[in-house]
Image (cartoon, rainbow, N blue to C red; front, top):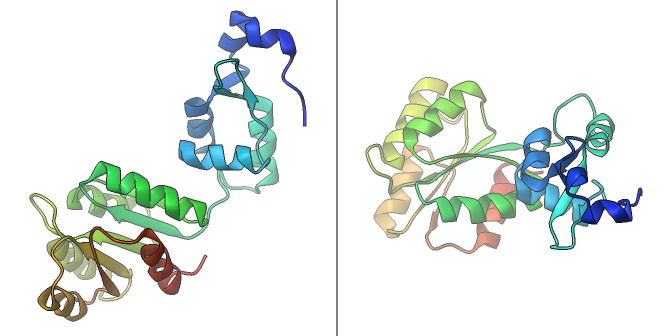
Length: 198
């Protein structure tokens, strides 16, 4: 692995050099979440260099070499999962956990965003919150089945309102599973793996 030139730590011009990218810029360059590139750095797959303040910097050439090693695509990704939930913090936690397991996670903050995402890129699984404003999860599930066929895209639903009626409704509506919120992330990961293995 190359070493970051010692003087560059103290050289403001080097930090502004377009050859060096911040964590956010590097994540956009590779088309992945910042948490993913941090993980790859920690695993030694993508070389990272640290400023005295502890910030990561990435050399553009190293990122290009990583892409070349990863094959013809822009990213090395597992099964595509669409996560639809209006709770941004919940989406972040679930996304990070699934990306650690090797899934390629897309996020949507509403049913409308989720449906638009499916049209642009069909996922292998949809993780869908029931309780959302405007269009709820049940209606989104109905529209997915109407547009793509019942069972064509597996859907795993979750909700803070858990009772036997909700579980029965999920089963009768064609969902592949139902989990209560707040949920155990390990349970969500295991159910995801059982539907779409990595």
